[in-house]
Length: 345
Image 1 (cartoon, rainbow, N blue to C red):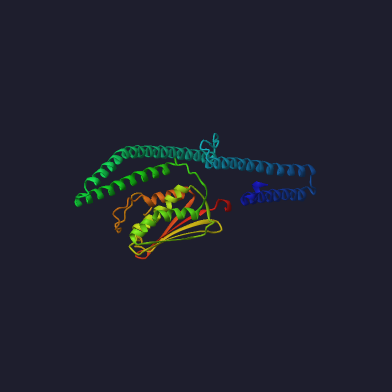
Image 2 (image 1 turned 120 degrees about the vertical axis):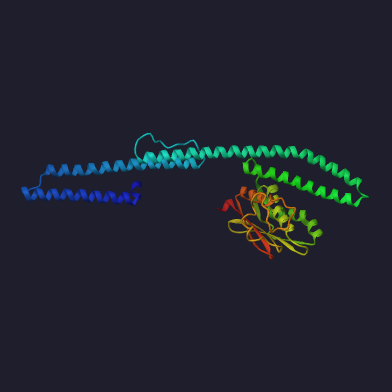
């Protein structure tokens, strides 16, 4: 029986049976010594007593075990998403006190979850409102800036000022878009349209996007991977995640540097590796690079916003993936993204 899987319960019944049998045989021995005979009626009564005691003990242990199994079933239901399920605890006793404590813990967790959800919704709506409000003046400023460029063709100083202004406007626009994306991901309001995609084709799109920049900055972008590797993902979101890492590599490498992109399929996962031989990341910063708005005091990058890697991490984790980083100061950085293959779990 299932209750005898517990070694302590099994030991309890073995010891109880041994004690009752020893008591029975002791009484029979004393009776035989005194009266020189063993009474059949006494023998039957003792046997019935022993069986009754064992059955009562078994019924008690069985009922307690059933109660615990029911509690475990309800706890598993809670873990599976039924947050309204509760364990019955209307009677007295230490086990019912335990069930009451579990119910209280579930209520507290529900309250925290509800508060967290409301906070995320408030943050998402607030940033969304701010972002939409900023888009209109940013669009207007870009138009004005374009008109000023036409008027400053013969004025080098003004032309330089307008170019710097356009650069800052681009940064603001990127910040607004990234903030909106991150808050949507945090709030779980993004619906990913996952399909089986060819990884080679996605990486080629990223290469095409960065080809001009690589040529302008005198850097080399090397791609390597198998043509037939596929991945269940949202193509646009995953391209953005990988592109953020590649952009980060361009931002922290010098002229003549090389950036490698490699993808391969192993027995249970698809792996994408982005590596560079740039300046590397200071050891003090390795545990903070995925934090919101984190800027290293050792970094020479004055244009970064501090949201790109956080956005990448959020997208990768939303695809049930993991991202790791290894870096050596002055030698380069390697980002490794792993995605489990569902059909091979």
